[in-house]
Amino acid sequence: MRITGDRELRRLNKKYGGNDSVTDVLSFAGSDGHLGDVAISWPAVVRQAAEYGQPQLTEFGLLCVHGMLHLLGWDHTSASERREMVRVTLAALQLSGLRPAPGRL
Image 1 (cartoon, helix red, strand yellow):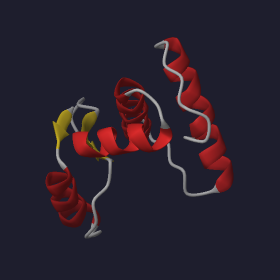
Image 2 (cartoon, helix red, strand yellow):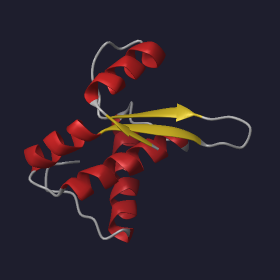
Image 3 (cartoon, one colour):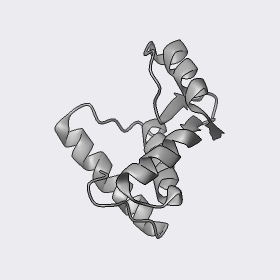
Image 4 (cartoon, helix red, strand yellow):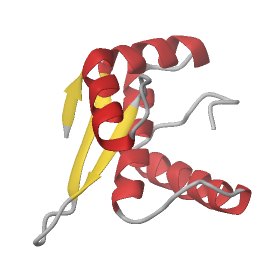
């Protein structure tokens, strides 16, 4: 897990994803028994927590779960995939005692 800033996430997103834009979380698949790595922009955590009116810890937990699900092969390119990923995200957050604000997912 790497906690960094918007500039770093933008650079990584451009270099590895071909997208010249900032994002909140990126996942990088590993190899040889290593699941992979997750990079999260802390400024994005702060902004999004304020935007949705929830604690920063909740937003951070949500992004951690989101990144880990991508490492495990989950995606959200279709509506059905998105619904299932939201369901699993909410279940994982609930186990941690975290509850996203209404409208966040």
